[in-house]
Length: 333
Ligand SMILES: *Cc1c(COP(=O)(O)O)cnc(C)c1O
View 1 (cartoon, protein in one colour):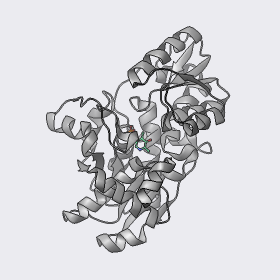
View 2: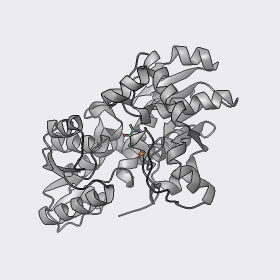
View 3: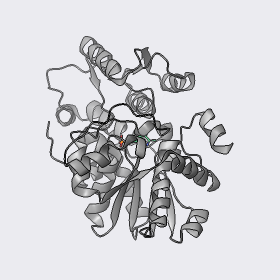
């Protein structure tokens, strides 16, 4: 498997692979925020993506290459020609689990999603709704990954990583390609950062066409692993995080994605839990539903405006809309 950093052409190729299988999401002007922050602010609505988050892009790019491109596609993934592929598997109860289940259903490949024993009912139902088998195991992600690897080995399934793979990062980058088409004069793009798949893809797209624009990562103070890794100049692990932005609780950036982030992302801005809640209300005020992770980009833009460095036209990627009912109740209380 080639581990060179993804480039523009990889994202163009991803866009061709996933076209018609995932949504081209709208870019809408945030009227209230623009007025309040004194710069034009737009929202890239991945909350309206199929499965409710951008993760459908990367998972679809990966699974399509695996299932439809023969030896060439398998080579991109690192599956040798002699191995038989009976299905796909992953270990996430959240947006990535739904995305892989969706992508597998599109190509008619069996799919297993390993979830924690205490998974909430609606998430498990969403995964089953895309025809995947759900296996419950443990409470930590390392327990789930170990279980997924065991099942993969026993059944001949391929593991689909949540962020740390060129095909996944390139798939997520198609959101950046659309931003360029929808707002060719964009000056700043704010992107939520977990393991770094989304921002490595989006920064690759945006920087290769608009090197003078800025790509800014948004990370919770309580999940500042990429921020600290950039400071240290190497991957740093922060241990368990408790931020309300559950999609950003990765404890370290990816080994594959981190060098791309180092090279192409201008800065990472930290946002407090209070700022994330406030940004969630800001997005609701624009008549859109975000989950906390998805609103962190808005929290970062609000911070940028307060510090005097927000430059419009700015785009905030609303990375997902799968908010739990309790979260919405709390946001509106
Ligand atoms: C996974 C996820 C992220 C983080 O994406 P990475 O590619 O891991 O950086 C952000 N927002 C939402 C809604 C997610 O599901």
